[in-house]
Length: 410
Ligand SMILES: [Zn+2]
Image (cartoon, rainbow, N blue to C red; front, side):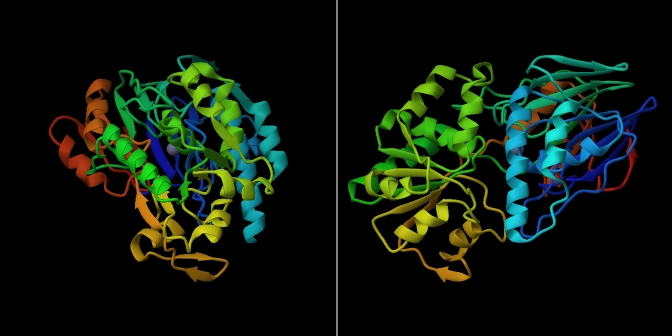
């Protein structure tokens, strides 16, 4: 079998893996990197038979609309992934236009992609012209799946994975395989204890509210915002939700089997005030104690409005909940205590803290997934410190660290 990464081999972003086997051509994920300017993977092969989408995040899905232009490609994903990827790619198009970049595809491409999809359930199997792909939950976010391709050898592609259960989803359920293609975002790094992190988060929220401040919680719309809301659910704070997350909530609420506990999810959302119109934002500022809002890295979205209103208030807090990529406003806030809005640099007086709500498996959990899969060969992708995982696996399995664009055989 021949493998080739179109992108995302040694970095987090723009993932795409082409697999050629027995005259068939498959593609696993096709993402972009939503930086400013955005970056894209290499072009997909024209003769693509099947493209598989592990989950909706843009670094995995952001280029899939282009696949609707290929002559015969069938697409596979869970129904939740299809719905959320539609939302995210439409939003990416809007952002590209706002920022003045020529988008790589059109709304028509996003629309026609639906005719290519076969929706497959979380434990289902896709079959097409002798190609067989079995899905199994990846943890991470609702709908995220690992994909087992049964070919000349059995190849399990993890997409992004989380091995421990969270509020939103149960942990990953790896299947046995010969070759494991695994994400390595957290290679060499462990997460702090999740329960302890959440306790500290709720304590710090309470502290802010008690001293008369507001808490702004920037959170990614897909997965993180919901996880944060569930973590706060029992605490009784006046909580407002703003941004695209509310549309994602509707998709999740309609697919209870993809949630760890759909009743708890619904109950958590019942207590949350949703900002429907920009006019509601004043109300959120007046009456809210906690405002959960996009964008997660402070580079755009309603979060900038709230920060613009509250940054001089030393009683208020900004609690980051996600990974802050280099060059983002969130990273600048953590490293330098400043952020830039409309070319003006401000120095918030608020308390700034970061909490690790990661949806990715840490180093030792990744090692456990390798063991559970029984794979003899492991391809490490989607990480910039893959060597640390390779060293930890040395001697037990054969490890490959691929490079973008460079074909290799397994
Ligand atoms: Zn992801």
